[in-house]
Length: 233
Image (cartoon, rainbow, N blue to C red):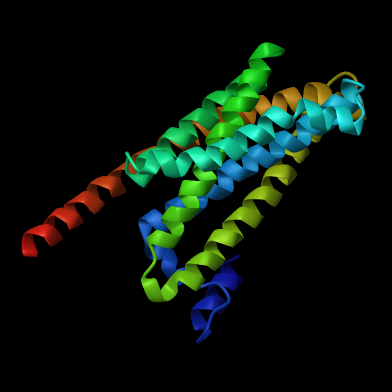
């Protein structure tokens, strides 16, 4: 990663212009996108295999069981722009992250109906964060740098999705190996998945709190700049 950054700084036309990351809103939004999508994809991956390996469902039945998660994410993607019409985009992103955090905690700790509600909240919040977070990344870059901002946005989506699956998957294997049953498939997608989801949900809550403080501070800065501009005008 360090070598990549050094290389990009030296290129006259970098593949990924890391200089844009000096913009706090852009960087935070990209980080929020990557982390939240990682949580979403990692959870989807583990639940898909849990339903099949532990629950005995077929691939089709597992897909049907996870439809609430996918549908809720699509609804969140439509709801986000509507909310942005009434609130600042930073506030909408923060609200979406808190919805994701609550849903993630429910999925990780509550079986049955609680897990279903958790999936809906997780999907809904993720859709809001993805839509408005992407808008924040693109909107915070200069007009002549939108292509470079788009590269950062797409990198955040790709890295977040892949890293989430890798991290939560490795955690499930690690905690399954510590159980009495050993690292069997049933243990990985049973007790291992329980531990991976629970610990990940705990850390995501702390991430949400830290990211929210920074995002809301950029809201005040944006308002101050807008007020100064209006006075000058």
